[in-house]
Image 1 (cartoon, one colour):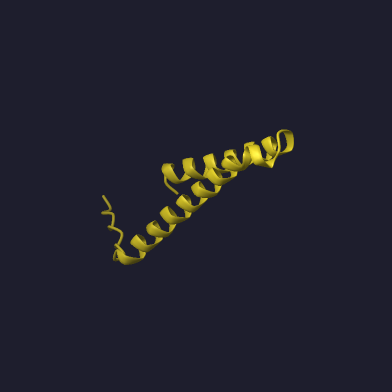
Image 2 (cartoon, rainbow, N blue to C red):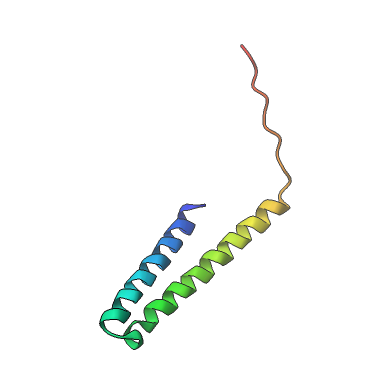
Length: 70
């Protein structure tokens, strides 16, 4: 996973936890936007992950270089 993917996933999980806390203290109608942002970030994360998998499958496999012994 790349750094961007980790940041998106972490932000989505943090918004989910904050949304749960806000829904317990202030009500679900006040934390609805936090849940929608979290779900949107999860969709974006999944899209980036699927694109990376598709690009990896399209590129030909590379052979490792042989090391020369001294």
